Image (tube, rainbow, N blue to C red):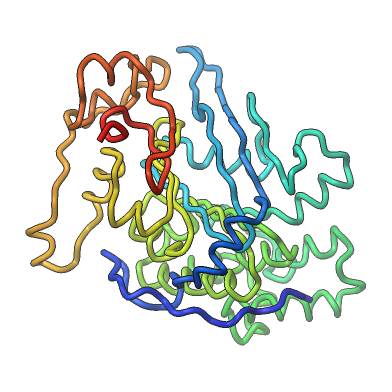
Amino acid sequence: MIDRTAPAPRPSPSAPVPGVPAGGGTAPAAEPEAAALREAAPPVLSLQGVHQVFPTRRGDVPAVAGVDLDVRPGQVLCLVGESGCGKTTSARMAAGLADPTSGSVLFRGQDVAAMDKRERSRFRRAVQYIHQDPYASLNPVRTVYSTVSAGLRRHRMVKDRNEARRAVTELLERVDLTPAEDYLDKYPHQMSGGQRQRVAVARALAMNPEVIIADESTSMLDVSIRVSLLNTLGRLRDELGVSFLFITHDLAVAKYFAWDGEIAVMYLGKVVEHGPTPQVVNDPRHPYTRALVSAVCEPDPDLARTKERVRLRSADIPDLTDLPPGCDFHPRCPLYAQGSCDTVRPPLVRSHDRLLACHVVTRE
């Protein structure tokens, strides 16, 4: 049923990941030639200057304020940031679940908002969404078979019930729910959280997607189950060539899953740093990214004692209805420079090997 060819396995990086066991094969170090080809390929899914403003009684809330992102074939793009920074809103717009207030979402170069019914149906199949909560994302009165086969039947990808059950069995085995026959007729309440999330992954794979948007899809799972699911997602990425827009607040998870991909760091609806994962995680340059890396737990006591701690000027996050002038991060920033940071909003510009939005760092 799934007709993509599987590339040769790639080795995982030797760099340890704080809070996540090393190895596992989910963070492969891509060959330079393959990486260059992916970067040269046109993006499958793009956000171009997207804004999302929510009107409230207290005023307009700019949840997303001009974000540009490209998801390229076979690539992982991680969107990282603390709660409320606009990650999920950006993901929902990318999936077509919410329309941007302004800006464009492009699939294969075509504006999603201008698609006709047939093109929209193709887009819906090609871009699949895995929600954060495995308890709420599955219908409690539907069996696993009914849930996973719904899209297959809706889009007439199977001829009859027997073919549908065979297809669902194959999908469950692909996401490591074996033996699949033991799960086909179960209801969500009869499974663990990790098993439910694997069912959600199988449901997404049923459409032969080109892009999977995983919105904090491992954050509600135990650590051991989290690593196992990340390994499964990494294997599917390598075998099927699926692109991922991976949403997480955990830089350790981003490093583990997207070692040869990219990380875009968001703060208050804007991308403040965007670059290759190894550079962003191992050498963060924006002060907000440095603070996020500093907050990652270090399991090695010796490294934990010597780890650099970033102290912010304030722990309070600005109100989205009353943002400060200049850089949104300047009230908390340890590198704050009076006269520039508090008057002029920094643009996102190319600085060596990444994009940065910081007056101080880009002057260095």
